[in-house]
Image: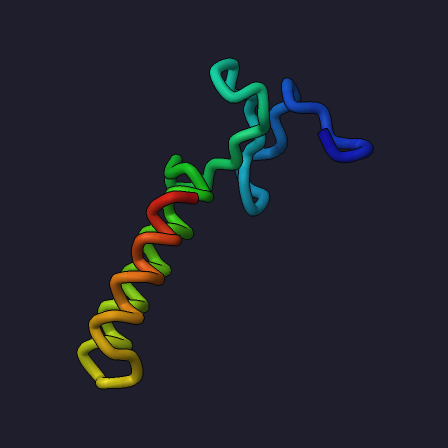
Length: 74
């Protein structure tokens, strides 16, 4: 737990995210204003970005598969 942040505290939902405790992981989980887990959203967006890079030819299939595997394992 970072100094000054309690995992059991709820922040104002109008702010960037709400921090709630995750009893299974014993780590804070940050939700976006839409209620989506911040970290899951980030992983989904990164994979979407990889798809665009592959389509535009910025990365090859081998690099795409390696990066996608890394992002999914986080």
